[in-house]
Length: 138
Image (cartoon, rainbow, N blue to C red; front, side, top):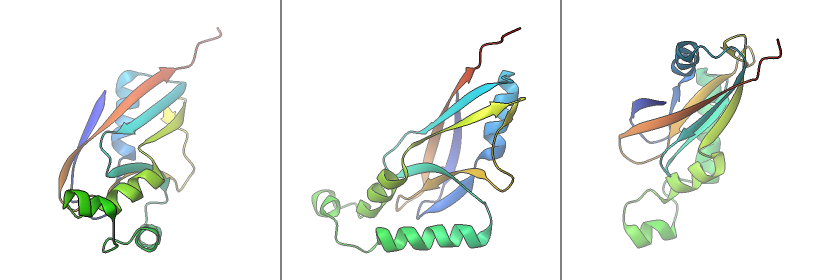
């Protein structure tokens, strides 16, 4: 199954937890794992406390690690100016697995699943979900 998002790019961080939870409930999985994968080389998935301070800290850290205005061989080769986006996405990774317990994502109290779009333009993003149900031992 897949969930789609319209993004703005430029390290936009979107809380996708509610949509992932809806998909799990719709599928009726009670115990298992959801694996998420964002298709594209300039976006990533991770978890964080979805609050303004933590989001700003993450954006600032990524800007220090791979500055948007840095000198990138990718930009020289392709002229699209998003070399930083490819690096940030590679560092954070395109996939994430989360356990499901009693039909709910087994996240910490302040932990949310986020999609981060690093590209330098708006995009339509697809997050693919694979649900694996644990075998019942009854």
